[in-house]
Image (cartoon, rainbow, N blue to C red; front, side, top):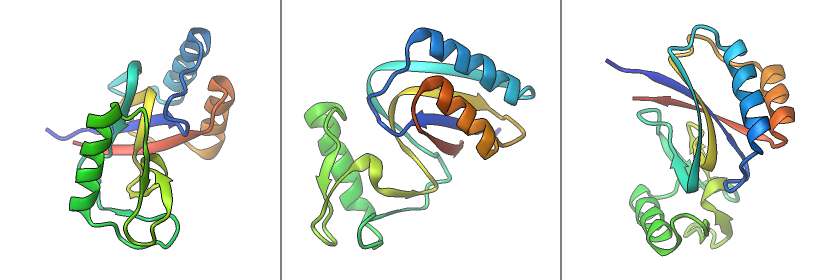
Length: 150
């Protein structure tokens, strides 16, 4: 059986809000998504790849908008993980030789890196911009919305 996950992560991969703000964000997140099968707030010891599952389509360079070769991207992800467990996400893209964070590449559908994740399984509805702004104010960080399908 397939499932959809709505995930919100800080745009700064290493950011983790204080415990009281995480709890407040969870309560508000639950109130926004009352029909979700499950709501999870997680914090990991190190930065992790928060993917979009089967929604993954392609990766683009944010500078020149060229498609990045997926084999190059996979090898780069492996190298960054093996070298620093994603503590250092800075890479040089082959298309235009500019330096970017892996977190700032353009993923279609959105994905990213984080230690802190708000996640709803099968929420049945989406969050609107106003609701996301409220959560951003609570956690004191801009958030990236990721729809994952598994």
